[in-house]
Amino acid sequence: MKKLIIFFYILVQIIVITSYADYVNISSCQTINSTLLAGTDEVRINESFSHSGSCFNVVESNVKIDCMHNTISGDGSGTFLYSGTNNNNVSFVNCNVNSFSLGIDFSLFNVYNDNLYFENLTFSNFTSYYVFNLEYFSNLTLNNISLLNISDGINLLGWEVNSRSILSNIYIENSSSNIDCRFGIKSTICIESTPRIISENITIFEDDSQYSLMLAFAGGSVFNNITINNTQNGLLLGQTSFNNFSQITIDVPQNSLNIYRSSDNIFDNIILSNENNSIIIEGSELIGKSENNIFRNSYLGNYSSIISSNWSLATPNTFENNNYLSGTVTSTCFDNPLNQSCEVTVISSSTTSSLFPLGGIFISILIILGYLII
Image (cartoon, rainbow, N blue to C red):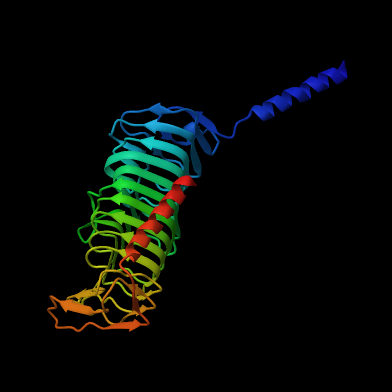
């Protein structure tokens, strides 16, 4: 009898221990706070649902929110996930989000967030504001993110010089930015004052924004395997230096690459296919130079006007082992109030067939299909 009692006692203890959950299940929008968490550090959304207005308000640090691959649908109003307090170590993963006015907003002035992690997220039908509006943060990860049928995509405004950010496997389709990033420019991805970014595998497809990707006052970053398909312009660097770009494909009808008062950037293995200016380099003696940029092992397209330097002191910039559509490499200075000269160094360049842009487009298609299959 005594052994039987001991057996049942042990059995009850096992049941109690195994039934204890280290997460909280929810099925509606609410505030993520210590009361909800009740001593745990994870919230799981256990079913899909619809909601009107703003959804999740995060006021607690060290929390993970897992949608478990469910779908949350709004009515076109409100903010999906936001915070107005200082938070550290916040993760949001595995979610499909549809039809809110603003997606994820951590942007309140003088509110600082450290270690933000977003992964395996799909946002669709956000036509009013940014999907990601993140400011005053340090140490950010965006991985495996899809943005479909949106207006403004990603706005990053960092503050910590030692911050590290990772942007990887991001796919954006059918976008049209309505909000100024910097210098009066509208861009689907706006990165400002955010140093030391490691970015890989970004595709921006069927974009109707003024620019697809803009970096302003951002340096010391690495961008690899970027594909841009835009009805207007491609990539803009504004007062942004000491970055490395490789395996970049830009297919636009106007300006593929605009380097505005930016220096010491390296472009390696890039493909520019367009109908207007492949590269514009702009600088000013009074405001800021564009110099010591290096373009190598690339296809730069655009007949003979490979580089235009407006009212600039853009000297020197180096072009090494590149291919061009046709003609010779020239530097054109115009609208130059300071009467500055432009200097371009060209090393081992050659021309190629006009069929090459089709190759660039074909490569872009393969990259996009590969992403979709994965």
